[in-house]
Length: 68
Image 1 (cartoon, helix red, strand yellow):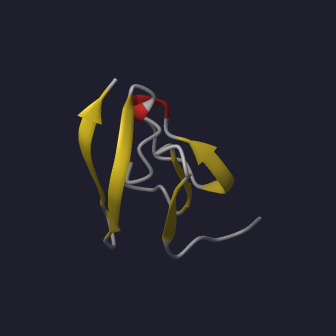
Image 2 (tube, one colour):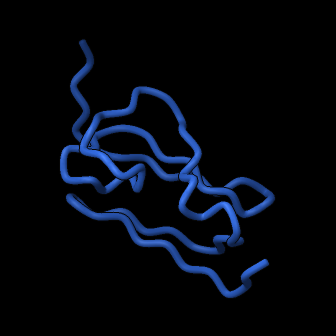
């Protein structure tokens, strides 16, 4: 079993957001409090182009300027 000490955020060239790592406070954005061992698409943002992400100890932030 892996233990995660941080979360990782990635924006694809199409503005999709993938997160993985420590999710014990829901900070990965998948609607749960699970640790995720590999990149997983954040479905909440499927209709948005994310332009900026920020990660803190127990939170993640996402910014967008365009809605499709």
